[in-house]
Length: 313
Image (cartoon, rainbow, N blue to C red; front, side):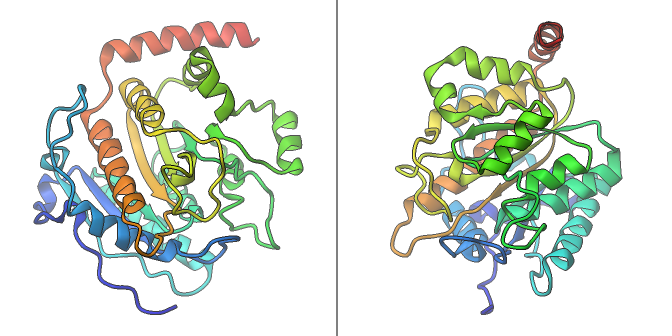
């Protein structure tokens, strides 16, 4: 792979002192198992470059602040040479270092496989007390894909094998084998068509997430291709900007966020809007995650979850 340009610090602002930083962005320009459109290796560089042109003030009612002021570091990109297993080991080590320092680890991919490195580090650090929320057009629950088990199409299957509870929102594509896996495990994903047609369907999925910490994984293809064409497999019928913002608000209001990633941006030459959208999306997600949960929302969620659990028995 050709040498990549250096990573611009997120938002184009000077790096905060490490002892004042609450989050650390870790670029991982991995592109090894992509299966349709290439380009994810260039995603972190494009996102960081676009972020330097954002307004730092977020006008969202819950924020109305400059999230960058909370202290957001940008780390050097993880070396993606070698096997996928070797790269994931480096990701795990990078995430573990931020967890040890008490900072929120934030991966910017690269292909979705990088998420596995972060999840492994979190399990080693804190056990399995957190849930994974995958915002993605695809389930990524294949056992293997194109002869590989460490693949973007298998990352959530590996998460399940780690013993983690995984929730899927925005899905609109899966294989027959994945459909069988859903049935065998009793997993009910949040299909995009249901979420868009019925507000209560989204509420049901959100109430069904176990109270407590969450890891949020955002594959940019969860957005409709009319908004996000710059991704490896742009699936029709996706969420829009406000749909996704509302989901992030609910998640971050009800749960402490222990890790975050944004993956699968594959920049299109001459088209800046997707890069900028990805940068704004990451900034908003960071702002909400660093703001922390709302105690009233946490209490209401626990009540609704207990009701949801009784109904599910």
